[in-house]
Length: 276
Ligand SMILES: [Mn+2]
Image 1 (spheres, helix red, strand yellow):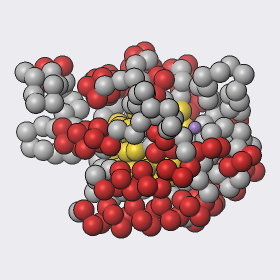
Image 2 (image 1 turned 180 degrees about the vertical axis):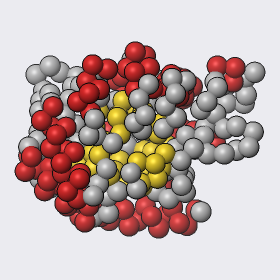
Image 3 (image 1 turned 60 degrees about the vertical axis):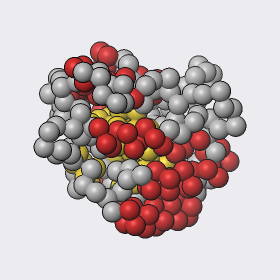
């Protein structure tokens, strides 16, 4: 059966809303995604050093973050760009998260890395790996929450089918993430698809979060786009935050400062409350 969104419902078993309309709530330590409130995940694009991630963890915690992000294995478009500090990065991220009471999320790029992610609370599947089906199946066989980003050339149906790969293996804890898609537009890094969030919230059981940093690639757009996401009922907002964006080793042009992040959390919560 094809519904009015052109989704072939026969392909789905787990991700669409059931007849009872029940929504999935994904719990990560004390943080619940999909409980009706907007949650904030913040931190640098990449874990740069132990000292830096501790400093940023404290800053984002005080600015209203619920979780800490930071890449250790960075799948960069160019092999000559900073690739992340690897396993040490995961170790420092987990340590900083524990110290400041923030659950952590980091990107996994290969199923062989799973043992290294033991102390990380959410496994992120990045846009470039959204259709890495062996990786999806492998994380589906774990009981760790998964943050699944939409590929920049993938449809909403393909995103949901990738989530089906994880859920059908047994892992029911999947959070979807809209992070912008590739269009003809070059003024922004990608084109933020706010309607994808509305649609996913209507048809899917899964929590949906927004990543305005990678969607826009421009720090001055991160706040307004976050507020747009809050206005359509997003379950969480993940932003790249750095105390010295000009010197960030990765994605500095889209990083906001801790004080800008604080403003974002306050305003987004107000908007979320207004539409409830
Ligand atoms: Mn980044």
